[in-house]
Every structure is written in C-alpha cells, then in structure tokens.
Image 1 (cartoon, rainbow, N blue to C red):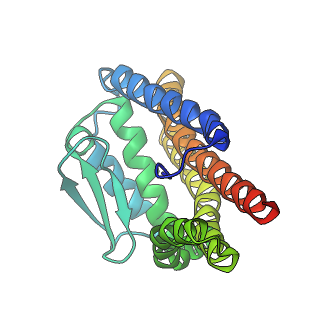
Image 2: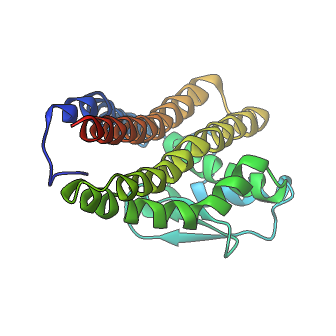
Length: 229
C-alpha cells in the first residue's frame, strides 16, 4: 500500500499480510467443502433469504442474483440483498449460511442496529480518507513537511476506524444467521458447516482491520523518525 518508500518498518505489515492470506485460504477451503453438501432443508440460498427476511420484519427487501463468486452483499441504499451465482440457486449448506448472513445485515437495517448505522455514515468519509491519505503522507515525507504528514495520518485513521466498526457488524450478522437457521431446525451437522463458512469469512475482516492498524502504526513510526532527524 505504500510501495514508493521502503524501510524496515515494512516488516510491521507482515503479520497482517500473513493473516489475510490464511483467511482467504480458509474461506476458499470452507466454502468449497460445504458447497458440495446439500442441505436437507431443500431450500436454495434465495429461498432461505426470502423466508428469513419475511419472518424478521424485512419483507420489503428484494433478493437478486449478482454475477461472480462470493460477491454476496446487502445494499442498504437500494434495499436489495444480492446473492452470487454460487449462492442464489444453490441448496448447499454453504449457500444457506451465506444467504442467512446477508439477510442478517438486512435485519440489522430494519431494526436500526447502531453499529450498522455508524458504518454506513462513515463509509463515504472513510473512502475519501483512504484515497487521500497516502498521497498526502508521501508529499509531506518528500518535502519534510510534518503538518502534511499528520493530515495524511489522520485521513488514514478514518479508514482504520471504519475497519474496526465493521467487525461488530459482521460478527452480529453471523450470529443472527446461525440463530435463525438453528430456529429453523437446521440439523447440527449442517449448522457446523454454516459456522465453519461464516467463521472463515469473519477472519477476513479481522485480517483487514489488523492490516489497517499495522499500516497506521507504520505511518506514525515513520513520521516520528522524520521528526527526530
């Protein structure tokens, strides 16, 4: 993320990169395993999402198919839950878990879940901060101008805060998904698969937050070193 300037502080980023790689491998492995196991519930991901939404006060949310793999997401602005090709029409345990998780976000929205509201409010600000942070920091570094470096750090800190706020939102959606499927009499062996898929997915968010925090620590360290020089 900051390839124009190499120094030993880059080693700070290694734990985050390793965790991100491990998380991606776990997600691929868990999803690949459980997408081959058909649920005895007999529902597709789209049908499960529709049922969950209707039973939890989010009946006005549309369920649509979206191209790609693991591109599933809930769009609060349009009120649409979009499921990937691998989830929408699949009756697998993995598909039910992913569909229920995304439905969990729609239920959060319907119930005015505070962390989701905070994340939605922060999203555009954090996006601008993330884009502006490194150019500003780099210019401040090149011209040895500490105020501009600090502005870059504060901009990136907004992005870091967004990653941190995302964690409870994702964990809560997964807990809702498991609870709803459990209440719907999904057998324990299938719930085990749902938990495996969602736990692996949650780890990707933890890895992203850790990467952001380590990058922020690195920028602070570089700024401190330059100030002492």
